[in-house]
Amino acid sequence: MMERKFMAEPYKTKMVETIRMTTRQEREEAIERAGYNTFLLNSKECYIDLLTDSGTNAMSDNQWAGMMLGDEAYAGSVNFFELEKTVREVYGFKYVVPTHQGRGAENILSQIAIKPGDYVPGNMYFTTTRAHQELNGATFVDVIVDAAHDSQNEDPFKGNVDLKKLQDLIDRVGSDKIPYICVAVTVNLAGGQPVSMENIRAVRELTKKHGIKIMFDATRCIENSYFIKEREEAYKDKSIEEIVKEMFSYGDGATMSGKKDCLVNIGGFLALNDEALFQKATQLVVLFEGMPSYGGLAGRDMEAMARGIRESVDYYYIKHRVEQVRYLGEKLDLAGVPIVKPIGGHAVFLDAKRFLPHIPQDQFPAQALAAQLYILSGVRSMERGIISAGRDAKTGNHYYPKLELVRLTIPRRVYSYAHMDVVADSVIELYQNRNQITGLEMIYEPPVLRFFTARFKPLT
Image (cartoon, rainbow, N blue to C red; front, side, top):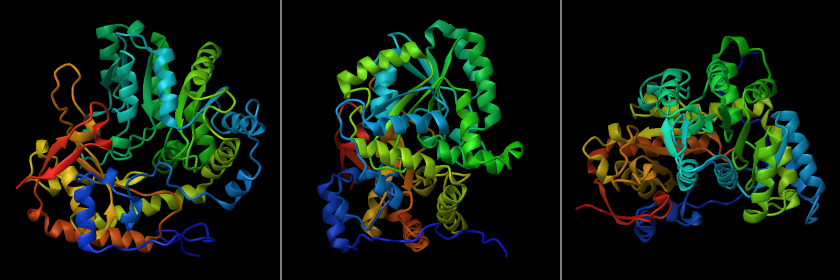
């Protein structure tokens, strides 16, 4: 039997949620109320919601069944021990500290590992990760390969760490000022780009020489593992679980947002191999989250996450996941819409600079594009550009990232290929009328993570 280019969903539907298309007038009023920030729209105002893949997954019947087995004991919940066992078996880390979501783990890691004046290199920043590092006195240093900043470069591993950049930082500030390198798998703000196993091993060899730890941002590790299987010859016959286990064997710990590749709607954890760091983490989790055996989660949530972790390493699940994203990206690319290449694992990223070359970056082209896509179609997306990058804490000036993107983020096991067709048709229509789109002015700016709550108005 011939294998289809794009596989059908490896599941069948047992329950549905009704969605409704609003009128253009309703959407114009809604986006104005939201200050032209798609984060501030109400979900019922959105027809196809591609704001994020964080916590928007559809859980399986097995996960829902597990929810009924929630042990809500204040200490020593049986579900914690199931989660701990699962993390050890699937990811290979010794110690697990559950948190309410990934940023809770980032907060704890930053507090126990960073001291003022430190430097934390990483393969491109992520918004909350960098914010926690900076709040604890560190300076983030981007050590990703240059190809990651070029939306049209088709290097298969644009998430790789540039070893020369990392070595230059070590030579400049000294290894004692670098508590760890944060390696994201995959790299969200580069367009969902993966890191090769070869590169991870090389980073381990370099950091080991200098006594520097590797801490993974493991949020989309299953997607990264799929790309390794697909693109690295030595791993084509390896299972996803084998690849995940080897990948994390080169690290000292990881922060995980369970709301992505763990296939749940809430939760996360900090995983560690160092017992002394683990003990420090358990002290802080009590202060910020809860007991070390629940960390801000109900027992039922920990059970669902443990089961989701095991489901996530199923090859047919992740193959469909990546191919559905690729299906949308290829439709847009064939129509000439500028997107980040190669197409990533969790989203298709529109290149707003090339989509709207008439709008300068300080008039927020990605934000304007996301707003206009919503007005046209009811499709909610999000900005990943100058607004997400924020300001330099010392100078107060905007950071000007090379990538000015709109992210079309596909929730796991939620939408069909027909939904992807609707999204593609909408983006293509908007591209054909792109000269009618104007820039925005920011009228409210919060001091931290401004992309969540900033407000704008159109420039006339």
